[in-house]
Amino acid sequence: MVLILLVRDYIDRMLHDILGMKVLVLDPQTVGMLSVVYSQSDLLKKEVFLVETMDNASSSRESMAHLKAVYFLRPSADNVQKLRRHLAMPRFAEYHLFFSNILKIQQIQILADSDEQEVVQQVQEFYADFCAIDSYHFTLNIQNNHMYMLPTVVDPPGMRSFCDRAVDGIASVFLALKRRPVIRYQRTSDVAKKIAQETARLMYEQESGLFDFRRTENSSLLLVIDRRDDPVTPLLNQWTYQAMVHELIGIENNKVDLRGYANVPKDQQEVVLSSVQDDFFRANMFENFGDLGMNIKRMVDDFQHLSKSSLNLQSIGDMAKFVSNYPEYRKTHGNVTKHVALVSEMSRIVEERRLMLVSQTEQELACTSGQAAAFEAVTSLLNNESVSDIDRLRLVMLYALRYEKESPVQLMQLFNKLASSSAKYKSGLVQFLLKQAGVDKRTGDLYGNRDLLNIARNMARGLKGVENVYTQHQPLIVQTMEGIVKGRLRDVDYPLVGNHFQQGRPQDVVIFIVGGTTYEEARSVALYNAANPGVRFFLGGSVVLNSKRFLEDLGEAHRISKSSTTI
Image (cartoon, rainbow, N blue to C red; front, side):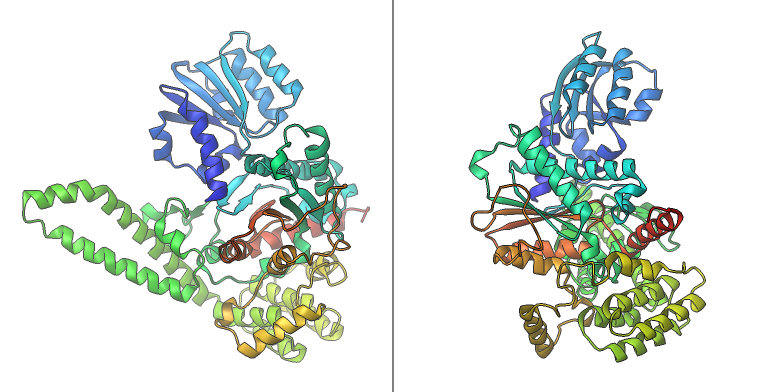
């Protein structure tokens, strides 16, 4: 629970020493940062009886002098200006101001000048400027995520904002971990280089004193890489629980919105999937769909047994025991209903979209070579009216990424077929993907066919066979982690920033993916950490992708690039 505990500790310290009834004021970003690690009941235990957003607090004039205000905000210029107005007409007895990252001197001066009534009790920096989704996985929830695919000249302010947010988030993670890392980046990515260089400037020049954790120098590594080096992973259907929920339904800050689905009970229309709050989810988040079904059946059977025993209340003692256990009973009932609803809905979607058939071909495109058979399989699925437009598009993209150099004529046939069979297909989108993430743009050995070691490993896997055809794909990040641990990450492909060199194997490694992470990659990181106790890997990115979000970002970048005369 490393990242989650770090953020929880900050929130605990924020609320613990302020005695009495409190109001917690958040901005749209810190709402997400807090909600993934802290529940409503956790807040009540800390005497927080009201939670407001900055905008609501700005519009309300009602005096609440009986409450102490705890503000937890990002140190943005907009937040500081809003806070200035709040302090000019204070509604609360006391103001305790906590910022999720480094405040500028000018911002502190503005707040000091605004506190004419001397209601501010403290101003502190608590470095939790990231969303700690799981123990080793964080996201920054950057809205304009498509920016990483565009040259800086298209939208300089947009690119500046994107890179600044990435640098802020990365810096906050290392301040929370109390580390100053050696920094490397993917050579072929301009945006990864820019973020790596600006992070180094912040850590080693502008705020060098803040990052001076001397005993840990050179024991940690930051590697900034580009999503376009592995465009395959976000295009694949998923078959493990957490990744599958995000792919088929969507997860935002550990919440799943089921309101648009017909067969979901009313009390389960928005549910939380948290490895902190839900024991069943923690135990099954990385399980494949088949094993998950068996485990849910076991959970339902156990609950039915519990329900039958609760009906057999024969004495006052039995009744007293049931009443004392009732909150746990209610929690178990809610959990069972939630997981059954999710799995039922995903089963319906899998059946409706023929995803078992589609996914088998996807996995073969990602993991095995054989151009002629692949062309035949994709053509067959394009002709299948049961296959959805988005699945047809993903299949053609996966084929194009694998065989762009081998079969240009057949690739053009698939483009034409896709355009004629999918009304929503935007012409040129697959070609734009190849321009962004084709073989000439990539650094890593995505298909394991460049490096002799990877070729041998793939042959060995092929000879042994695969345990599950639907989960045989391994993200490129697995190779990257192995390269770091074994010292095989080539300096020419992943240069160092500045004169800071790694001495020996790093203990803590943060891999930041510009353009977004996936839950499949987060699973690979968690499993790698469990099997290799000598090193801790953390995975972070600008957003958490599923295929829908990846295609939306690609489509938006394509639209802007077509309308721009500078590209």
